[in-house]
Image 1 (spheres, rainbow, N blue to C red):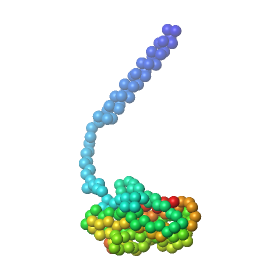
Image 2: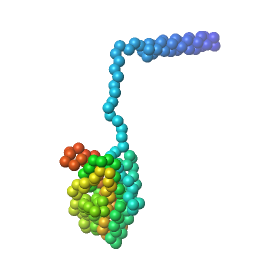
Image 3: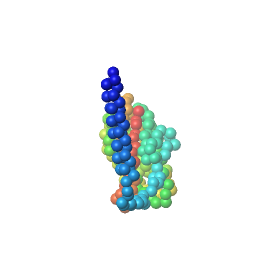
Length: 193
């Protein structure tokens, strides 16, 4: 028994010595000298987007992350339905922007008899997306001018289904400065039940 106790004591002592040596090594690495120092500053700031999405007056939209993506959930029936204000697109700055909707994917749209999506301000209406007899006949429209400090609305008109189910349209909202080439894309999902 006495021999086993000595072996355990030697092992523990060896472990303690190894930890002390390792600790001293780490101490020297962490507390080493600094030979060069450089300060890096950034001119990049973080600000809210100039154009944001807000819930429309029809109360059928959900707004996500930083007001730059949304889901519009609307009922499709065998009767024609129109929603004038499914989503609001708000320009919070004085600069004008050009905006348009562009379909980039879809699911189960063959069940839809008709659907037209427009951008408008109650005076100017620009057709963006058209579905006729279950086929997308227009996947994007002309650019709509979103004036400074103004709001445009997404209108869904003549929505009609030919059979029960659920359809999805996955759409970009393209935002750019007039005559510019740089743009921003927001994501909008239309869920048609």
